[in-house]
Amino acid sequence: MFEFYFPHYIINEPNSIIENLLISLVATFIAFLGAFYISSITVRKQKTIELEKQRLLYKNRLTYFSNLITNSLEIVEKQLVNYEKLAAEIKEEPTEIHLLKMNASTDLSRLQRMDSEGIFSSYNEIIKESENKLKDYKNIYNTIDFIYLRVKQAIDSNEKYIGFLHRDQMYIKDKIDGLSDELIKVIKAIESHGCSFKDTVEYNFTTAWQSKYYELVEKQETIGGIETELMLPYAELLQSEHSQKNYFPILYDFTSKSLVRYTHLRRNTNQFAIELENIRSEMKESVEILNEINEKIKLAIVNYPNKQE
Image (cartoon, rainbow, N blue to C red; front, side, top):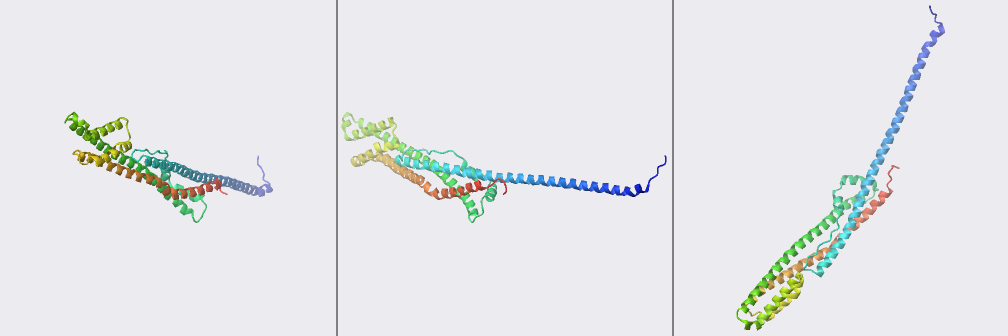
């Protein structure tokens, strides 16, 4: 059936299309704004999270660095005490080998191996600006390097001390053993002349000191004890009462060489003991500087918030 369109339908139809279009545009725009707003909030939250992570990383890294400094200084202090004890032991018995007690720790070497760029970023972020900020940072590594090298030098010196002392001990032992062999030769030469010669001063002298030597060896006397109980009194008597005897030159040669090495040994060990005693005073200023800077770092870490204020 044929349909008629009234005029008002024809007139109003375009308005309806425009209204729908406007509504669609407005809805789309609102949806866009909503999405943009949500996206912006998400991005801001993500940035905040990343910033907080970065700040926490700075804080944790500098905290670890500060703890290493604290631990290292504690170990250094214990090691300084060990050096002083070793110096006292050496002075009490300079002819004997004394071993250095070591406090096992790798914290000091870890400080040197840490990523200096990362530490500087954390330090620069957390430590407040001041005229000493950069100077303190430089002093941290300068003092760490000095302390590390000085401790290492002391350990190296201790190894050399043991090596030199052992060498001197072996030299002395060799000369005293050689002296014993020569005394035996003299004794046998006297005995070869008959029993009547066993009452002579020469025979009594040589057999007495040879017996003393065997006695000290049997009881495993220290090399310092051998010097005190045998070599010094024997050398004095040899020079004062037997310098004109035909056996004097060879016996004196072994005796004098061993006593000269004893003197050399004592001089070296005494110098090493003095070096150990001086280490604390040498390191005192560096340790104090590092302690002072570390206290500043600890305070700054405590006052540094995880979130941006």
